Amino acid sequence: MLNFTFLKYVVICISLSLLSSCSTPPSALQRVMQRGELVVFTRVDPTTYSLDDSGKQQGFEYELASLFAEQLGVRVRFALPKQFHHILQLSSNSEADFSAAGLSVTPNRQQVIKFTPAYYEVTQQVVYHYRSRRPKSIKYLKDSFFEVLAGTSHAENLRRLKKSKPSLSWNEAYDTNILELVSMVNNGLLDYTIADSNQFQIFRSQFPQLNVAFDISEPEKIAWAFPKGADNSLYNEAVKFLNGLKQTGVLSQLQDKYFGYSKHLNYVGICTFRQHVKSRLPALKPFFHQAAEKYQLDWTLLAAVAYQESHWNRHAVSPTGVRGIMMLTRDTAKQMKINNRLDPQQSIDGGAHYLATRIKKIPERIQEPDKTWMALASYNIGYGHLEDARVLTEKQGGNPDRWVDVKERLPLLAQKKWYKQTKHGYARGNEPVTYIVNVRQYIEMLKQLEPADVSQENNQQAEDALNMQLPAL
Image 1: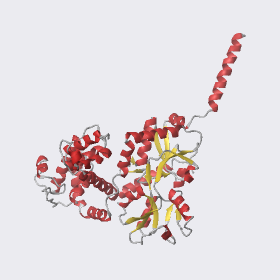
Image 2: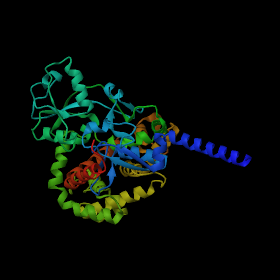
Image 3: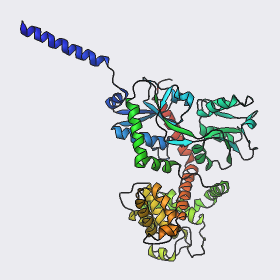
Image 4: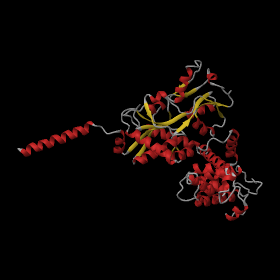
Protein backbone atom coordinates (compact mmCIF):
# COMPACT_ATOMS: atom_id res chain seq x y z
CA MET A 1 0.00 0.00 0.00
CA LEU A 2 2.82 2.34 0.90
CA ASN A 3 4.66 1.60 -2.32
CA PHE A 4 1.53 2.19 -4.40
CA THR A 5 0.92 5.57 -2.73
CA PHE A 6 4.54 6.59 -3.31
CA LEU A 7 4.36 5.53 -6.96
CA LYS A 8 1.16 7.50 -7.44
CA TYR A 9 2.86 10.54 -5.92
CA VAL A 10 5.80 10.20 -8.30
CA VAL A 11 3.51 9.90 -11.33
CA ILE A 12 1.59 13.02 -10.28
CA CYS A 13 4.83 14.98 -9.81
CA ILE A 14 6.12 13.95 -13.21
CA SER A 15 2.81 14.82 -14.84
CA LEU A 16 2.75 18.23 -13.21
CA SER A 17 6.34 18.82 -14.32
CA LEU A 18 5.52 17.90 -17.92
CA LEU A 19 2.42 20.08 -17.89
CA SER A 20 4.47 22.95 -16.51
CA SER A 21 7.11 22.59 -19.22
CA CYS A 22 4.45 22.33 -21.94
CA SER A 23 2.79 25.51 -20.78
CA THR A 24 6.02 27.55 -21.14
CA PRO A 25 6.89 27.97 -24.83
CA PRO A 26 10.56 28.28 -25.78
CA SER A 27 11.99 31.80 -26.02
CA ALA A 28 12.95 33.40 -29.34
CA LEU A 29 16.60 32.55 -28.71
CA GLN A 30 15.75 28.96 -27.77
CA ARG A 31 13.71 28.53 -30.97
CA VAL A 32 16.68 29.65 -33.06
CA MET A 33 19.01 27.28 -31.23
CA GLN A 34 16.57 24.36 -31.45
CA ARG A 35 16.12 24.62 -35.22
CA GLY A 36 19.80 25.51 -35.77
CA GLU A 37 18.85 28.34 -38.12
CA LEU A 38 18.53 32.12 -37.96
CA VAL A 39 15.98 33.48 -40.46
CA VAL A 40 16.47 37.09 -41.54
CA PHE A 41 14.29 39.40 -43.62
CA THR A 42 16.35 41.51 -46.03
CA ARG A 43 16.12 43.08 -49.49
CA VAL A 44 18.20 43.03 -52.67
CA ASP A 45 20.22 46.24 -52.72
CA PRO A 46 23.94 47.03 -53.15
CA THR A 47 23.98 48.30 -49.56
CA THR A 48 22.34 45.23 -48.01
CA TYR A 49 22.24 41.93 -49.91
CA SER A 50 23.02 40.76 -53.45
CA LEU A 51 24.69 38.02 -55.47
CA ASP A 52 27.94 38.62 -57.34
CA ASP A 53 28.56 37.41 -60.90
CA SER A 54 29.54 33.95 -59.59
CA GLY A 55 26.29 33.63 -57.59
CA LYS A 56 27.97 34.17 -54.22
CA GLN A 57 25.99 36.01 -51.54
CA GLN A 58 27.43 39.35 -50.45
CA GLY A 59 26.50 42.69 -48.89
CA PHE A 60 26.90 44.63 -45.66
CA GLU A 61 23.75 43.27 -44.01
CA TYR A 62 24.46 39.77 -45.32
CA GLU A 63 27.89 39.73 -43.70
CA LEU A 64 26.70 41.37 -40.48
CA ALA A 65 23.85 38.89 -39.97
CA SER A 66 26.08 35.96 -40.95
CA LEU A 67 28.56 36.92 -38.24
CA PHE A 68 25.70 37.02 -35.71
CA ALA A 69 24.56 33.54 -36.74
CA GLU A 70 28.15 32.30 -36.49
CA GLN A 71 28.38 33.64 -32.94
CA LEU A 72 25.15 31.83 -32.04
CA GLY A 73 26.50 28.65 -33.62
CA VAL A 74 23.67 28.30 -36.17
CA ARG A 75 23.30 28.66 -39.92
CA VAL A 76 21.63 31.71 -41.45
CA ARG A 77 18.88 31.90 -44.07
CA PHE A 78 17.78 35.11 -45.77
CA ALA A 79 14.20 35.71 -46.89
CA LEU A 80 13.03 38.42 -49.28
CA PRO A 81 9.44 39.63 -48.86
CA LYS A 82 7.77 40.61 -52.13
CA GLN A 83 7.27 44.24 -51.10
CA PHE A 84 9.43 46.49 -48.98
CA HIS A 85 6.82 47.24 -46.31
CA HIS A 86 6.48 43.51 -45.58
CA ILE A 87 10.00 43.63 -44.11
CA LEU A 88 8.48 45.63 -41.25
CA GLN A 89 5.73 43.11 -40.52
CA LEU A 90 7.43 41.38 -37.63
CA SER A 91 5.67 39.48 -34.85
CA SER A 92 6.33 36.54 -32.53
CA ASN A 93 4.99 34.14 -35.16
CA SER A 94 6.67 35.85 -38.13
CA GLU A 95 8.53 33.87 -40.79
CA ALA A 96 11.74 35.71 -39.84
CA ASP A 97 13.44 36.24 -36.50
CA PHE A 98 14.34 39.85 -37.34
CA SER A 99 14.97 42.23 -40.25
CA ALA A 100 18.41 43.34 -41.42
CA ALA A 101 17.66 45.53 -44.41
CA GLY A 102 19.25 48.94 -43.91
CA LEU A 103 16.20 50.14 -42.00
CA SER A 104 16.02 53.71 -40.70
CA VAL A 105 14.87 54.19 -37.12
CA THR A 106 11.76 56.40 -37.30
CA PRO A 107 9.12 57.35 -34.69
CA ASN A 108 6.35 55.59 -36.62
CA ARG A 109 8.32 52.37 -36.90
CA GLN A 110 9.30 52.43 -33.24
CA GLN A 111 5.63 52.14 -32.36
CA VAL A 112 5.35 48.68 -33.92
CA ILE A 113 8.87 47.21 -33.94
CA LYS A 114 11.92 47.27 -31.69
CA PHE A 115 15.30 48.50 -32.97
CA THR A 116 18.78 47.59 -31.83
CA PRO A 117 21.31 50.36 -31.18
CA ALA A 118 22.27 51.99 -34.47
CA TYR A 119 25.31 50.77 -36.39
CA TYR A 120 25.28 53.27 -39.28
CA GLU A 121 23.85 56.65 -40.37
CA VAL A 122 22.49 57.88 -43.70
CA THR A 123 20.70 60.94 -45.04
CA GLN A 124 17.80 60.95 -47.50
CA GLN A 125 18.71 62.66 -50.77
CA VAL A 126 16.64 63.92 -53.71
CA VAL A 127 18.14 62.49 -56.92
CA TYR A 128 17.75 64.20 -60.31
CA HIS A 129 19.30 64.07 -63.82
CA TYR A 130 21.75 66.81 -64.72
CA ARG A 131 19.69 67.65 -67.84
CA SER A 132 16.76 68.53 -65.59
CA ARG A 133 16.53 71.76 -63.64
CA ARG A 134 17.91 71.21 -60.20
CA PRO A 135 15.21 71.65 -57.53
CA LYS A 136 16.53 74.04 -54.90
CA SER A 137 14.25 72.94 -52.09
CA ILE A 138 11.26 70.77 -51.26
CA LYS A 139 8.80 73.35 -52.58
CA TYR A 140 10.07 72.78 -56.14
CA LEU A 141 8.99 69.14 -56.10
CA LYS A 142 5.33 69.84 -56.86
CA ASP A 143 3.73 68.99 -60.21
CA SER A 144 6.55 66.70 -61.28
CA PHE A 145 7.16 63.02 -61.94
CA PHE A 146 8.31 62.26 -58.43
CA GLU A 147 8.16 58.68 -57.17
CA VAL A 148 9.48 56.90 -54.08
CA LEU A 149 9.36 53.35 -52.77
CA ALA A 150 6.27 52.65 -50.66
CA GLY A 151 6.76 51.61 -47.06
CA THR A 152 10.16 53.27 -46.77
CA SER A 153 11.26 56.03 -44.44
CA HIS A 154 11.43 58.17 -47.60
CA ALA A 155 7.65 58.04 -47.96
CA GLU A 156 7.19 58.51 -44.23
CA ASN A 157 9.39 61.60 -44.27
CA LEU A 158 7.54 63.09 -47.24
CA ARG A 159 4.23 62.73 -45.42
CA ARG A 160 5.73 64.59 -42.49
CA LEU A 161 7.03 67.37 -44.77
CA LYS A 162 3.67 67.68 -46.52
CA LYS A 163 2.13 68.98 -43.30
CA SER A 164 4.06 72.23 -43.74
CA LYS A 165 4.20 72.06 -47.59
CA PRO A 166 0.66 71.10 -48.72
CA SER A 167 1.60 71.49 -52.42
CA LEU A 168 4.12 68.66 -52.17
CA SER A 169 3.00 65.62 -54.20
CA TRP A 170 4.51 62.28 -55.16
CA ASN A 171 3.67 58.70 -56.08
CA GLU A 172 4.51 55.63 -54.02
CA ALA A 173 5.55 52.50 -55.92
CA TYR A 174 5.12 49.02 -54.44
CA ASP A 175 6.43 46.38 -56.86
CA THR A 176 9.88 47.89 -57.47
CA ASN A 177 13.10 48.83 -55.67
CA ILE A 178 15.38 51.84 -55.26
CA LEU A 179 17.69 50.82 -58.11
CA GLU A 180 14.78 50.67 -60.56
CA LEU A 181 13.55 54.12 -59.46
CA VAL A 182 17.02 55.58 -59.88
CA SER A 183 17.24 53.95 -63.33
CA MET A 184 13.94 55.59 -64.27
CA VAL A 185 15.35 59.01 -63.33
CA ASN A 186 18.41 58.25 -65.44
CA ASN A 187 16.22 57.29 -68.41
CA GLY A 188 13.99 60.36 -68.11
CA LEU A 189 10.90 58.43 -67.00
CA LEU A 190 10.93 60.19 -63.62
CA ASP A 191 12.08 63.66 -62.66
CA TYR A 192 13.10 62.78 -59.12
CA THR A 193 13.31 60.02 -56.58
CA ILE A 194 14.83 59.67 -53.12
CA ALA A 195 17.74 57.44 -52.15
CA ASP A 196 19.77 57.03 -49.00
CA SER A 197 23.21 58.64 -49.16
CA ASN A 198 25.09 55.33 -49.09
CA GLN A 199 22.87 53.98 -51.90
CA PHE A 200 23.54 56.99 -54.11
CA GLN A 201 27.29 56.76 -53.52
CA ILE A 202 27.21 53.27 -55.02
CA PHE A 203 24.67 54.02 -57.78
CA ARG A 204 26.53 57.11 -59.02
CA SER A 205 29.33 55.14 -60.65
CA GLN A 206 26.65 53.35 -62.67
CA PHE A 207 24.68 56.54 -63.39
CA PRO A 208 27.25 59.38 -63.59
CA GLN A 209 24.71 61.82 -65.02
CA LEU A 210 22.66 61.79 -61.83
CA ASN A 211 23.21 64.25 -59.02
CA VAL A 212 21.92 65.00 -55.54
CA ALA A 213 19.73 68.12 -55.35
CA PHE A 214 19.59 68.37 -51.56
CA ASP A 215 19.11 66.35 -48.38
CA ILE A 216 15.54 66.11 -47.13
CA SER A 217 16.42 64.71 -43.73
CA GLU A 218 18.88 64.96 -40.92
CA PRO A 219 21.16 61.91 -40.58
CA GLU A 220 19.05 58.85 -39.77
CA LYS A 221 20.17 55.89 -37.71
CA ILE A 222 20.21 52.43 -39.30
CA ALA A 223 19.52 49.38 -37.12
CA TRP A 224 18.14 45.84 -37.02
CA ALA A 225 14.42 45.48 -36.35
CA PHE A 226 12.85 42.90 -33.99
CA PRO A 227 9.25 42.04 -33.04
CA LYS A 228 7.90 44.03 -30.11
CA GLY A 229 6.94 42.04 -27.03
CA ALA A 230 8.08 40.72 -23.68
CA ASP A 231 10.51 38.19 -25.18
CA ASN A 232 13.86 40.00 -25.49
CA SER A 233 16.08 36.92 -25.48
CA LEU A 234 17.24 37.07 -29.13
CA TYR A 235 17.13 40.87 -29.19
CA ASN A 236 19.47 41.06 -26.17
CA GLU A 237 21.92 38.71 -27.87
CA ALA A 238 21.88 40.91 -30.97
CA VAL A 239 22.55 44.04 -28.89
CA LYS A 240 25.52 42.35 -27.18
CA PHE A 241 26.80 41.17 -30.56
CA LEU A 242 26.62 44.63 -32.18
CA ASN A 243 28.22 46.31 -29.16
CA GLY A 244 31.02 43.75 -29.32
CA LEU A 245 31.59 44.46 -33.02
CA LYS A 246 31.90 48.17 -32.28
CA GLN A 247 34.37 47.61 -29.46
CA THR A 248 36.60 45.26 -31.45
CA GLY A 249 36.62 47.46 -34.55
CA VAL A 250 35.05 44.78 -36.77
CA LEU A 251 32.02 47.01 -37.45
CA SER A 252 34.18 49.86 -38.76
CA GLN A 253 36.02 47.30 -40.91
CA LEU A 254 32.76 46.16 -42.50
CA GLN A 255 31.65 49.74 -43.08
CA ASP A 256 34.94 50.51 -44.79
CA LYS A 257 34.70 47.33 -46.86
CA TYR A 258 31.29 48.16 -48.32
CA PHE A 259 31.08 51.95 -48.20
CA GLY A 260 34.63 53.25 -47.83
CA TYR A 261 35.49 53.63 -51.51
CA SER A 262 32.56 55.36 -53.16
CA LYS A 263 32.78 59.08 -52.39
CA HIS A 264 35.70 60.40 -54.42
CA LEU A 265 35.27 60.13 -58.20
CA ASN A 266 33.47 63.01 -59.91
CA TYR A 267 31.27 63.06 -63.01
CA VAL A 268 34.16 63.60 -65.43
CA GLY A 269 36.25 60.84 -63.85
CA ILE A 270 33.40 58.32 -64.00
CA CYS A 271 32.51 59.17 -67.61
CA THR A 272 36.15 58.99 -68.69
CA PHE A 273 36.52 55.59 -67.07
CA ARG A 274 33.39 54.26 -68.77
CA GLN A 275 34.67 55.51 -72.13
CA HIS A 276 38.05 53.86 -71.60
CA VAL A 277 36.32 50.59 -70.71
CA LYS A 278 34.93 50.62 -74.25
CA SER A 279 37.93 51.95 -76.15
CA ARG A 280 41.04 50.74 -74.29
CA LEU A 281 40.15 47.79 -72.09
CA PRO A 282 39.15 45.20 -74.77
CA ALA A 283 42.70 44.96 -76.19
CA LEU A 284 44.22 44.62 -72.70
CA LYS A 285 41.66 42.36 -71.07
CA PRO A 286 43.24 39.05 -72.25
CA PHE A 287 46.55 40.10 -70.69
CA PHE A 288 44.86 40.93 -67.38
CA HIS A 289 43.18 37.52 -67.36
CA GLN A 290 46.44 35.71 -68.19
CA ALA A 291 48.38 37.49 -65.47
CA ALA A 292 45.55 37.03 -62.95
CA GLU A 293 45.52 33.28 -63.54
CA LYS A 294 49.32 33.05 -63.46
CA TYR A 295 49.70 34.88 -60.14
CA GLN A 296 46.35 33.90 -58.59
CA LEU A 297 44.92 37.40 -58.51
CA ASP A 298 41.56 38.93 -59.43
CA TRP A 299 41.72 40.36 -62.94
CA THR A 300 39.58 43.35 -61.94
CA LEU A 301 42.16 44.20 -59.26
CA LEU A 302 44.96 44.20 -61.88
CA ALA A 303 42.87 46.22 -64.33
CA ALA A 304 41.96 48.74 -61.63
CA VAL A 305 45.59 49.17 -60.55
CA ALA A 306 46.60 49.62 -64.20
CA TYR A 307 43.92 52.25 -64.72
CA GLN A 308 45.01 54.13 -61.60
CA GLU A 309 48.61 54.00 -62.84
CA SER A 310 48.21 54.85 -66.53
CA HIS A 311 44.53 55.04 -67.55
CA TRP A 312 45.39 51.95 -69.65
CA ASN A 313 47.71 54.04 -71.82
CA ARG A 314 50.50 51.76 -73.02
CA HIS A 315 52.71 54.75 -73.84
CA ALA A 316 52.33 56.46 -70.46
CA VAL A 317 55.55 57.96 -69.05
CA SER A 318 55.90 59.92 -65.82
CA PRO A 319 58.42 62.71 -65.08
CA THR A 320 60.18 60.33 -62.66
CA GLY A 321 60.79 57.73 -65.36
CA VAL A 322 58.17 55.09 -64.60
CA ARG A 323 56.35 53.96 -67.73
CA GLY A 324 53.91 51.63 -69.40
CA ILE A 325 50.48 50.24 -68.48
CA MET A 326 51.58 49.40 -64.92
CA MET A 327 54.04 52.32 -64.67
CA LEU A 328 56.97 50.17 -63.57
CA THR A 329 60.30 51.66 -62.52
CA ARG A 330 63.40 50.46 -64.34
CA ASP A 331 64.57 48.59 -61.24
CA THR A 332 61.21 46.88 -60.68
CA ALA A 333 61.02 45.85 -64.34
CA LYS A 334 64.53 44.36 -64.11
CA GLN A 335 63.64 42.57 -60.88
CA MET A 336 60.51 41.10 -62.51
CA LYS A 337 62.54 40.19 -65.65
CA ILE A 338 60.65 42.57 -67.93
CA ASN A 339 62.61 43.65 -71.03
CA ASN A 340 60.19 46.20 -72.49
CA ARG A 341 58.06 48.25 -70.10
CA LEU A 342 56.05 49.72 -73.00
CA ASP A 343 54.90 46.30 -74.16
CA PRO A 344 51.40 45.91 -72.61
CA GLN A 345 51.61 42.17 -72.02
CA GLN A 346 55.04 42.39 -70.38
CA SER A 347 54.05 45.42 -68.30
CA ILE A 348 50.88 43.76 -66.99
CA ASP A 349 52.74 40.54 -66.23
CA GLY A 350 55.47 42.47 -64.42
CA GLY A 351 52.99 44.55 -62.43
CA ALA A 352 50.98 41.46 -61.47
CA HIS A 353 54.14 39.62 -60.44
CA TYR A 354 55.29 42.54 -58.31
CA LEU A 355 51.86 42.96 -56.68
CA ALA A 356 51.82 39.21 -55.90
CA THR A 357 55.18 39.59 -54.11
CA ARG A 358 53.75 42.52 -52.10
CA ILE A 359 50.72 40.46 -51.04
CA LYS A 360 52.96 37.54 -50.08
CA LYS A 361 55.05 39.85 -47.90
CA ILE A 362 52.08 40.98 -45.81
CA PRO A 363 51.82 38.89 -42.60
CA GLU A 364 49.60 35.83 -43.02
CA ARG A 365 47.49 36.71 -39.97
CA ILE A 366 46.09 39.77 -41.78
CA GLN A 367 42.77 38.86 -43.38
CA GLU A 368 41.35 39.85 -46.74
CA PRO A 369 40.53 42.38 -48.01
CA ASP A 370 42.88 44.21 -45.61
CA LYS A 371 45.85 42.20 -46.86
CA THR A 372 45.27 43.36 -50.44
CA TRP A 373 44.80 47.02 -49.46
CA MET A 374 48.03 46.97 -47.45
CA ALA A 375 49.83 45.26 -50.32
CA LEU A 376 48.61 48.03 -52.63
CA ALA A 377 49.85 50.63 -50.16
CA SER A 378 53.31 49.04 -50.25
CA TYR A 379 53.07 48.82 -54.06
CA ASN A 380 52.49 52.58 -54.08
CA ILE A 381 54.65 53.90 -51.24
CA GLY A 382 57.01 51.05 -50.37
CA TYR A 383 56.86 48.28 -47.79
CA GLY A 384 59.08 50.13 -45.32
CA HIS A 385 56.76 53.14 -45.14
CA LEU A 386 53.76 50.84 -44.75
CA GLU A 387 55.49 49.20 -41.79
CA ASP A 388 56.21 52.64 -40.30
CA ALA A 389 52.49 53.44 -40.50
CA ARG A 390 51.61 50.12 -38.87
CA VAL A 391 54.03 50.82 -36.01
CA LEU A 392 52.47 54.27 -35.51
CA THR A 393 49.02 52.65 -35.55
CA GLU A 394 49.98 50.29 -32.75
CA LYS A 395 51.58 53.08 -30.71
CA GLN A 396 48.37 55.09 -30.94
CA GLY A 397 46.16 52.22 -29.80
CA GLY A 398 44.90 51.16 -33.22
CA ASN A 399 45.06 47.73 -34.81
CA PRO A 400 48.07 47.48 -37.18
CA ASP A 401 46.45 44.50 -38.93
CA ARG A 402 43.37 46.48 -40.03
CA TRP A 403 43.44 48.75 -43.04
CA VAL A 404 40.75 51.01 -41.59
CA ASP A 405 43.17 51.89 -38.75
CA VAL A 406 46.39 51.98 -40.76
CA LYS A 407 45.00 54.33 -43.42
CA GLU A 408 44.39 56.94 -40.72
CA ARG A 409 48.09 56.92 -39.80
CA LEU A 410 49.66 56.85 -43.28
CA PRO A 411 49.16 60.63 -43.78
CA LEU A 412 51.17 61.22 -40.57
CA LEU A 413 54.30 60.12 -42.47
CA ALA A 414 54.32 63.55 -44.15
CA GLN A 415 54.43 65.36 -40.79
CA LYS A 416 57.82 65.97 -39.21
CA LYS A 417 56.49 65.32 -35.70
CA TRP A 418 55.68 61.74 -36.71
CA TYR A 419 58.12 60.73 -39.46
CA LYS A 420 61.03 61.58 -37.15
CA GLN A 421 59.86 58.68 -35.01
CA THR A 422 59.90 56.20 -37.89
CA LYS A 423 62.60 53.99 -39.36
CA HIS A 424 62.19 55.04 -42.99
CA GLY A 425 61.39 58.73 -42.54
CA TYR A 426 59.31 61.07 -44.67
CA ALA A 427 56.72 59.80 -47.14
CA ARG A 428 53.70 61.29 -48.93
CA GLY A 429 51.33 59.23 -46.87
CA ASN A 430 48.13 60.68 -48.31
CA GLU A 431 48.92 59.21 -51.73
CA PRO A 432 48.42 55.50 -50.95
CA VAL A 433 45.15 56.28 -49.16
CA THR A 434 43.75 58.08 -52.23
CA TYR A 435 45.35 55.47 -54.50
CA ILE A 436 43.49 52.61 -52.82
CA VAL A 437 40.17 54.46 -52.66
CA ASN A 438 40.39 54.99 -56.44
CA VAL A 439 41.43 51.39 -57.13
CA ARG A 440 38.49 50.12 -55.10
CA GLN A 441 36.13 52.39 -57.01
CA TYR A 442 37.48 51.15 -60.35
CA ILE A 443 37.07 47.53 -59.22
CA GLU A 444 33.42 48.16 -58.34
CA MET A 445 32.74 49.94 -61.64
CA LEU A 446 34.36 47.11 -63.60
CA LYS A 447 32.12 44.63 -61.81
CA GLN A 448 29.09 46.78 -62.65
CA LEU A 449 29.99 47.39 -66.30
CA GLU A 450 31.52 44.11 -67.37
CA PRO A 451 29.15 41.35 -66.13
CA ALA A 452 26.14 43.63 -65.53
CA ASP A 453 23.76 41.26 -67.29
CA VAL A 454 24.99 38.31 -65.21
CA SER A 455 24.76 40.21 -61.91
CA GLN A 456 21.23 41.44 -62.65
CA GLU A 457 20.19 37.91 -63.60
CA ASN A 458 21.71 36.51 -60.40
CA ASN A 459 19.97 39.10 -58.24
CA GLN A 460 16.65 38.33 -59.93
CA GLN A 461 17.30 34.63 -59.29
CA ALA A 462 18.03 35.45 -55.66
CA GLU A 463 14.72 37.26 -55.32
CA ASP A 464 12.82 34.46 -57.05
CA ALA A 465 14.47 31.71 -55.01
CA LEU A 466 14.04 33.42 -51.68
CA ASN A 467 10.49 34.53 -52.39
CA MET A 468 9.56 30.89 -52.99
CA GLN A 469 10.52 30.18 -49.39
CA LEU A 470 8.01 32.68 -48.00
CA PRO A 471 4.34 32.28 -47.26
CA ALA A 472 2.00 34.90 -48.65
CA LEU A 473 2.24 38.07 -46.60
